[in-house]
Amino acid sequence: MISLTTIIRSGVMTLAAGAMAACAVTTQIDSLKPVAGDAVAALNSAADGVLISEGVEILVAPVCEFSDESYDCAGTTLSGETINVVAPGSDPETMTIVVGDKTLYDGSIEAVLQKAAER
Image (cartoon, rainbow, N blue to C red):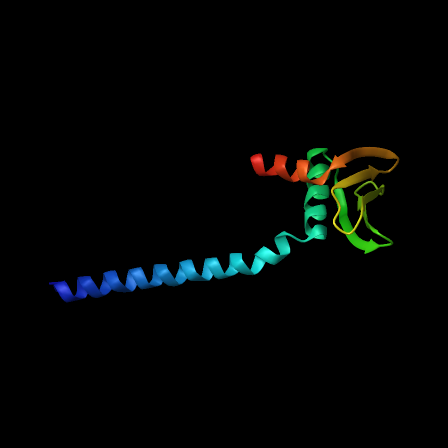
C-alpha cells in the first residue's frame, strides 16, 4: 500500500524537477538575447530567409563580414553561382541580394524578418 507521505514526496519531487527545467530554459533564452539584436545576426537571418523563399539551392550559406562601412556576405549555390549580400552601414536597414547576375532582393531587412515572424 502506498502511504500519503510517499504520494506527497513524489509530488514535491515532480514540482522541483519542473521548476529546475524551467530555470534552465530561461537561462538558455537569456544567454541568446544579446545575439538576437546583433546587426550581422539579423542580416544573416534575413538573407537566408530570402534565399530559401526564392528556392535557391545553397551549397555555402553567405558568411558576412563588416568592412569599409558595409556588410559584405558571400556564399555559393549548388550550381556554383555566387551569392552576394551587401548591406550599408554598421547597423544596416537595407540589403541587396544577388545570385549570379540576378538581383533577388533589394529592400528592408526588417520587412523580411517581420514576414518570417508572421509565419
